[in-house]
Image (cartoon, rainbow, N blue to C red; front, side, top):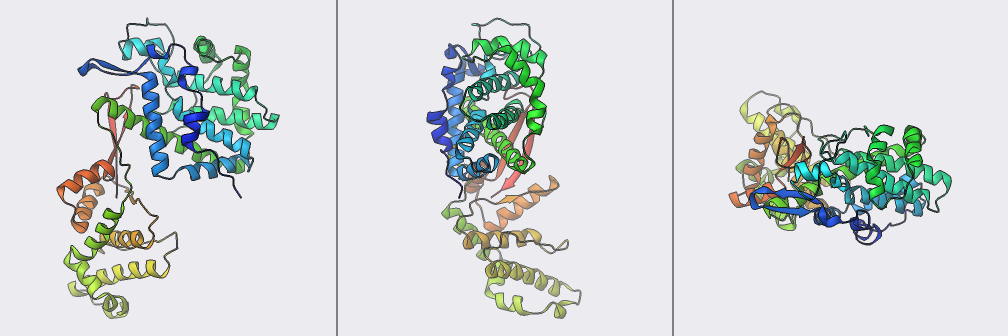
Length: 420
């Protein structure tokens, strides 16, 4: 039986050292600047706001059990090791912006006159420096811990891998590149020494020399769980960072993270059955549509086509009612069969049969289908304008920005998803 680990909230609230214990004079560093209102956000405040959003998302989405399961799999049921892996997961979010102590970032991005420009190859970038500081901090902690040599070797490899979501938290994809080199470590080592990190440069160089071997030595049976942890860290980090920055820049706090509540659940079910005439007809004559054999619907005409559409809806609903615990349902139908209505029939039935379901995602191969499907959903479950605004903000269209210059509000590529 897998052990329950400390919660994400417990780890970030009590077990991780505050960023103030790592960076001296933390109040001098700014995370964001609002030029229009002539104000700036202290780095510590931004980190705390990011963690506040991360905790809310983890609690709302019940992510702790998923993290625990993955950490236990990587640690092979060694609870002490699993606990530390979860701490590294949490730290990748808490410490993702340590690199904003880069004086070039402070001068060029923040217009912070407490600093002067420094000639370094990373310019004003902060993500690479964040990853370097994260790596050195935890390599030191693990090196002087009571873990067995093999456990330390595994943790060193995992620390290197957790640098990736930190490096890529302003990118649109999570690649496996770390951009680490002896030259970079040597150039940025002055920042390591400035922070409360006591790792000699020789140890730093050794990590670079063996980093690929450390990753290669991780057992193949652990690969998927580590990959899933990295993806989850990246998703949680980018979402929390976006929400926190949005709150600072717009003074709009997000409290709803797209969970389908009881009111919306019942509205979807009721309106699907009553809003449109053909769906009302479906439930009024359900047995008729279900029982008539396909062999009697072979003649090609509009009447039979309409009957076939209703029969397909009845088949979908009946299948779910017969096997409510089945984790997989597959709908295949030709063009014109009414697949959007079939999907909503499926959603409506599943939401009523399993009260634990609280999100529904539509994933499309083409962006052209998004508006078409959204309009069909709007029409079928009868959303009014106020509810559309609510659905947009909490669960309808979600915008994720890719920031090419490391700051919010400059170049943006929008990735659109639609979900209930």
